Amino acid sequence: MNCEQTRERLESFVVGEAEDEAQAIADHLSTCAVCATQEASLRRLVGELRQVGDAFRPRLLPAELTLVRAAAQARRRRRALLAAACVVGLFAALVVALSVPASARRLPLPVGRELQRLGVRTGRLNADLGATKTALARARAELAVRRQAQWFAATPEPRTNSGREARILASVAAFFGARAAAAMPAPIGTEAQTRLAQATVPGSQAAKASASLAPSMRSAFSPASRLSGAQTVVVVMGVRMLSTRRAIVFVGTFDYPLWSDSSTASVASLLARQEYWRESVHRVVLLRNARGRWLVAEDLSVGPPAATVSLPPAGVSAYGSTVPAAPSDHMAITRPTSSPLQSPSASGTATATPSATPSATPTVTPSPSSP
Amino acid sequence: MDDRTLVESAQRGSREAFAVLVAGHERSLYGTALSLSRSSWDASDALQDAFVEAFVKLRKLRDPGKFGPWVSAILVNKCRDARRRNRTVPTDDALFESQAYEFAGPETSLDLLDALRDLDEQLRVVVALRYFRDLKVDEIAEIVGCPSGTVKSRLNRAIAALHERLERGHPLDLEVML
Image 1: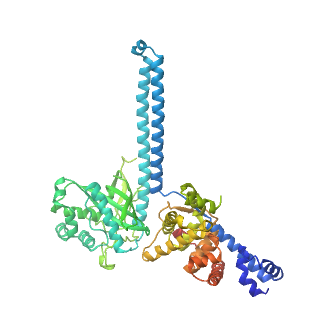
Image 2: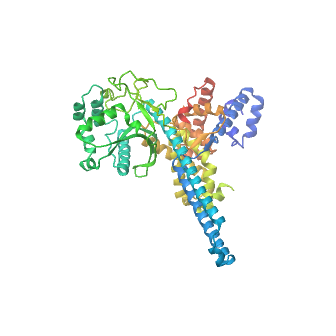
């Protein structure tokens, strides 16, 4: 077998498939240094490739799997505990009924009272422990979401398929609407949002801003909800596609006490200053089902962050360049502000693409009362 | 327990047997999917779809010993479908630490994985099926729909390209991928 024939069969030989010709190939390799070098190199590469194929280790997804499995485990545990408690209770009742005379059961029992007192105390301690654990978990979740939100805000957002994005945003709006009677401004990236953004750029007069608000924004606040006395305004900060059927949306919400035409400008002002950070941040994960509908799989609501928002001093625009320096331990919720809100015509639509300009960002700092 | 026994059990309705099959093939299938997809999320979605389809259609598998090539073919089709449906979807895995799979191999493998990702899709698929899934040339030819000779020549081209990229040195860009 010559060099050319050997090289043609080298791959099969290395993999172990060229059984018929293996001896001939091996003979040639023992006499040809060039082919032997190639064979060694190929063997090393194939070995590494096989390592790569086995190098991935599955781990649980944060939302779907962990929560579902934890819930199932908790259910199973509860049932087992309930069954055990029933058995123990029946057994104890039987023992008491059989062993303690009726007259003795009527006597005051200091031990019983003590046990009761201790039981109450244990219950209180357990409740405290549960509350502490819940608070800790919530704080951790808040920190994680805020880190992601910070990254989200600081990274230029790629444009996605507009139809898909619109469907995702509609699902988010419906989700919040159904849950909190929320009203959502037009999604970022639409013409309505562009007009809203134009209305909220610094220097605009309140009346002008009010007049410029998109009709969809106005219609979101129906007369019926106006009577309710409180609104939750949901601001979608953007959508990020994780895969073909998984998207993540960051949402800020704020409660507005009463909606009226005169307060349109105030809402616009809030949006301009992005004060919704102060109220709540949600990270909503959506999954697309087989029918192509986007469904909310996880809503990690952070709630009021117990933080104060350092807004630019009066007279300085939120989009301006003067911003108080954030303290070193600030929570660093920054939103780059030279967004396309200022120049929607540049990209055709007002996207959620924030620039990396570090200036002019409303900074969120923890209040003294925050833990 | 080999694949044949497990598949036969699963075909008789044993979910546990199917779970063992999944556990046995999951890693290499994910590696294959990752080499054919744009992101780890796409890869895990395609893998999940492939396992679901395999579970549903398992009774139609006539030769239980061919489970590996059969599920690989399903996976390749799922990856192709996903790519066809989503030409414009940008992906970004850098942010989210929690992904379905983590890379637990040696650091040198990262260079190789990166170099593999630079190859044409035609070359990537044969490399992944050959070395991640340990399929024979004929089985790969059936999956990709071309003669065995073409598969061999693609393998040789892929190996030459990988050698070249690794020798040239490849900038690590794996934060995007992993």
